[in-house]
Image: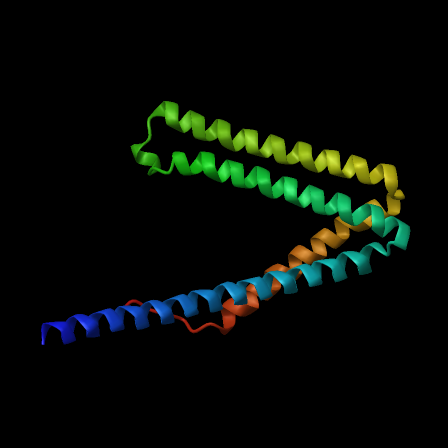
Amino acid sequence: MNRILQALSTLTLIVFLAFNGQAFAQRRFEQQQVKEKIETARIAVFSNQMDLTPEEASVFWPQYNAYRKQMKDQKDQTKKVLAKLNKEVAEMSDEELNMLIDARLSEAKALMQTRTDFIMSLRKVLPPRKVIRFYKAEEQFKRMLLEKAAEKRMNEPFETDE
């Protein structure tokens, strides 16, 4: 009888892990699909707004992708620093609070410098009109993402804690 119970609990655990792993894999797949749709939309918006020639596109996209990667890396690094200071503000010492302020200021400076460097590099390879169109494409893409996110939230059922 004991062996049967042990076998049943082992089987239950295996089934649970299999379904849980499958659900996790499904969520990762869906997240990857969403990322791909966002990237496709980004390319469409920027290509449409900027009206790049093939030569300009061959220069713009590698620079833009490198810029985005650098911005992401900087933000990830800042998240790591901030995670170390992940206390409630009320519990932090003045020294820790000053470190947090310094980390935020450093992040802002680094991000601005990266953006400035990117825009300066665009000015070397694109006409000014297309650099301005880059700004407009960025704004349009952000607005589109925000609208989609708001639309998605509106379609989700409202949950209450009852």
